[in-house]
Image 1 (cartoon, rainbow, N blue to C red):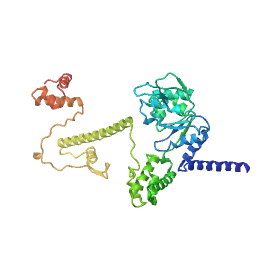
Image 2 (cartoon, rainbow, N blue to C red; image 1 turned 90 degrees about the vertical axis):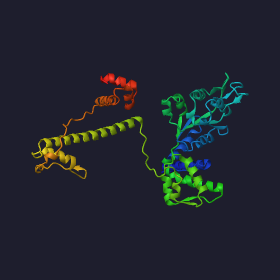
Image 3 (cartoon, helix red, strand yellow; image 1 turned 180 degrees about the vertical axis):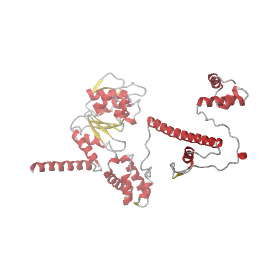
Image 4 (cartoon, rainbow, N blue to C red; image 1 turned 120 degrees about the vertical axis):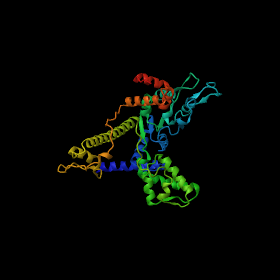
Length: 425
């Protein structure tokens, strides 16, 4: 019993500790994934290990570096947040590591970089996946030795900075594409903190909405908006591709625009992009598309060949009937007719072995026109091409220039085809 009580007390302490952190940093939500991310951040904070925070855009990754900094021994040092994606590639080395006077055009004086300014503190590199490869090499040296060199200088500078990075990029995929250094990834990813997207935290959606609604009501001095039951269900079931940032943005829009503070599902739908689309068709890769098109072609070819076979059977049947007008139709001939015409609900009526032979009434021979002998058409593309070339040459009296225009090909191509097929024209 004492052991159980001790475990329960530790559990309560952990829960109370997490709730206190949420209140301090204004974190809303009770999902297991969110609680786990907070726990990892607090546990790694007292160390000096590098941390990589991963998650989709808009999930609130920028809060966790602050938690780590505040619960570390560096909390009295500087905390500098840098958005790597917002700094032009040509100036990012100067921003991060500083430069010497005259290092480049416009460098009118010496400048300290963020790593020198944050000495003894923490630097948060947001959107780390956007760093140029040359800058990644400089960053790797700081992580390994704590040393860097200013742009335009040869003097090595020491710094004691803890690096926390965040990204919404799939880093392993970027490594395969040669856009991110593998050695840097493993240096940064000493302790990973994963932030789940909002669609995986349905229990947090309404809590966040209610918090945002109260904040905007206070900001704009108006009553907070409220959702009816159907609107709540719609809100929770929406996929939220923009995550918490999108939810906050939509809550602000509704708070400002809608006069009625009781929001129905119909009103809410107007603010949710593609809200009527539940399951969008997945985009196929090129390989999948090729397979799909190949399957469609096979189906089309099968249908065409089935139609051609039916027409061939019908023509042969008609020829047999014309040649043997007085004889009854055989069982095979009757089955061909049934296959072609006798269907019930789309199903072919099977041949009845006990059915009587079909007889044709006396035909008026004088009213029957002669028919040409049936010759099965060739499906050879080569023969069709030769036939079309000959027709075009005949139409234009052997003038190849006009024949080529008629065929929609160049005169040079026509010459080559005539030579290839040995066409006289």
